[in-house]
Length: 246
Image 1: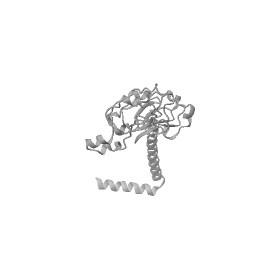
Image 2 (image 1 turned 120 degrees about the horizontal axis):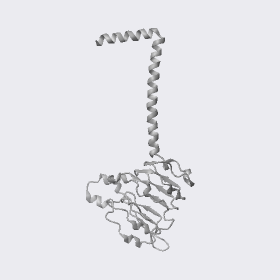
Image 3 (image 1 turned 90 degrees about the vertical axis):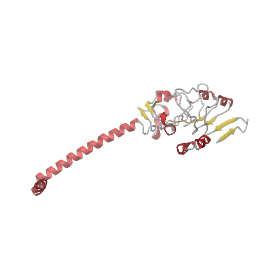
Image 4 (image 1 turned 90 degrees about the horizontal axis):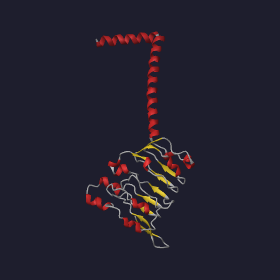
């Protein structure tokens, strides 16, 4: 946590204000202690004065569900941005003023929402994201209650080397172009497809139970038909039980 400056120019290039204590907010009952543990209030536009800033981490703070300031998109040299569990997500976050290769890696904005802001658990469509960052290398949208199909615009992320869409309710397939063909594991895991697989598993479970019952029933019946001694013993047992019950 702190400020980093360029060794050549002295300009501030890194601002790491992550709150390492914010993850424990649910266990803190003293409001005063809570306020000390992380940042709050609103983000001041004076941040734009840091014109050489390329690393910004405000994650795990408590901005009380405030919308992410759109002026963040004007930080033209920004390469790394981590706002997870700090803000509310606006309908759009405009980054058009930033350079075309503005991010080197991203810890995406919705990450861990459900843990910090329970009121934000409503399902959000992945279509609200504009995928125009062609130099984006890492994209993590896991655990975010995203719904709908993966938009074709994702195929414009030609530099993407890591993709994690797991633990959402997404349908369909990720784009089958470029490097997307090589993604496995977390890029696809535990989405609606896995729910469909669970549905198939449940179906086949009941089928197997039904088949097991039928096979077992006819195995007993056939045994009683073939073996006279077993059949006599079975009916004798039934008669005895009937006598005891009635």
